[in-house]
Image 1 (tube, one colour):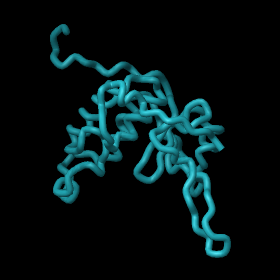
Image 2 (spheres, helix red, strand yellow):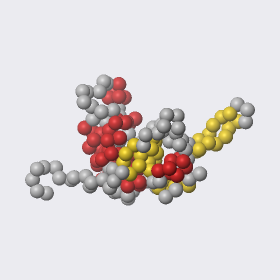
Image 3 (cartoon, rainbow, N blue to C red):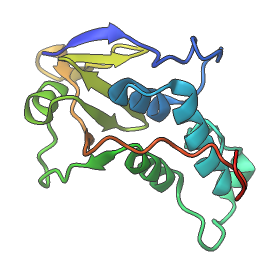
Image 4 (spheres, rainbow, N blue to C red):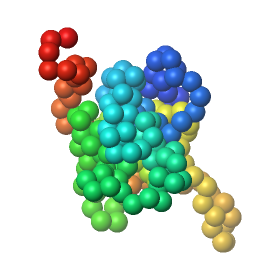
Length: 176
């Protein structure tokens, strides 16, 4: 089984405090080595454009907004997150139907990567799950044997394709 190392992706060093649903931002910052704030600002821009919370947490969006139908051309939060992963140089691996790899198998097959589970994403770098909580295992209740611990499986895997271009900070057509 892969190891675990606490890593907030540079969130605290960037001046951010408290807890929020920014797992996609953290995973990108950790796996790509980019500055947390730069990744956060890219995510915030794309999410706000589509009417979601700035952190990229689709579940933090207000209840009223979630129940309202999407505007024409508005992306689902998951699609926006996927777009930001692509902007930062990641591509989603097409997993064979019914063949979800454990975190260890994902690292063995793809090397450093980002793994997605239900409502969460985390980076696997240098043989260790790097996140703010240890999500490598979960408890499973068997009727005959009781509770056992199993290694978590990835529902999606993202790998680096190329170094992503630095996001532009220029906001007008003129010179900075």
